Length: 108
Image 1: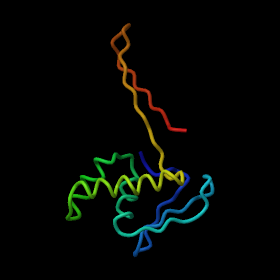
Image 2 (image 1 turned 90 degrees about the vertical axis):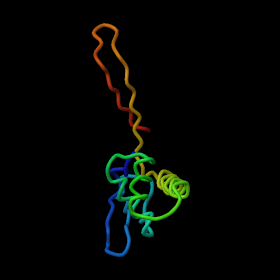
Image 3 (image 1 turned 180 degrees about the vertical axis):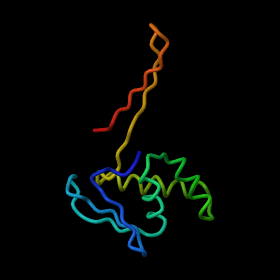
Image 4 (image 1 turned 180 degrees about the horizontal axis):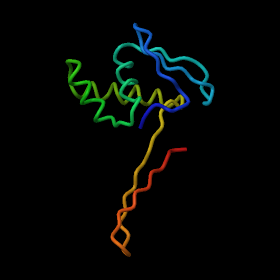
């Protein structure tokens, strides 16, 4: 998952901003605190909840469970406004030539 291309992330020096480009149903600006800003920064590249939590553990002190809960909450809020692009990958083997086939699906 990563930030939808219809949004731009901007760091104004004090907080991370997420701005809709008008290419999504959401119209507006998302202001974030330091922790949410860190999560948004992680989401600028394709990542997972586990990878974000791992990065947070290196940067912040706190229980892993609380970090995971916070990451999931922020991602859910961003998903609700259409700011997250989710991808599913399916692997299969062709019985004809044993070649791996990888299909990537973009969530609607």
